[in-house]
Image 1: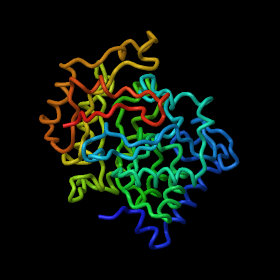
Image 2: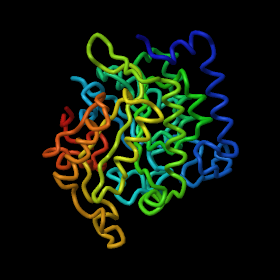
Image 3: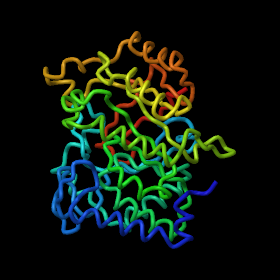
Length: 335
């Protein structure tokens, strides 16, 4: 099963898609914020990003789901900045430090080289982490890399606050969608991620991803994921994520065979660790909260996907981007 973008490349359609995506930067409509800034002329949008992509780290990562990490790691490329402001962001060192991230700007050609380097290192895929605000730049780099021998599947690892129009243009470019569905309630989205309409747009985006990918995950003979939609649900303290409501929405709107990745790795960091306004998020989830979430999967008949191990998850997924070459411990904590 070859990567989808190779078909578009062979049909001479990939370049056209890239140009359509880049046109959205001229009065930026790349995400639902619809800033309208001219990023092609390097005006800075609400995500604090301009024309060039910002790469804070790229590495073989072993903390993803087993079908992505495999034995050689997922080839993750971590973009700097973000269109959300999550008070508990575990990557806050690169997502909320825009004044220092400017120095990590790279050309599209250099981004393509990073992809080819990760392929040369034996990584199983190219995973773009927080790609929403750099989707056009990502697509341009994929085109350049594909013309120079890239064959790995593309993973779009997103907070799901994505533009449906952008996702439609990524149809046939992205092989695997890996969205977070953070909240069932828009008030929680505003309080903890500073976005008033998160749930509305995230659900619309995930429905578009499902339209493209369908229910089934596609695996290679080696057991590695080659295509599909895998929705991540991070369990938050005091059920701030609304896990049951989100699971019921997924089951009813997308279907019970939709793959879920249930995550126990939450720990209080960033503002959630220091600001009393976010006291409900100031602790690790309890064992009871975790098992309530796990029980819901069985109760709702949703059996496809993965879950983390409760005991280890919150202790190991603690990145330090001061070490850009290896910000994560090598840990495999999914079942």
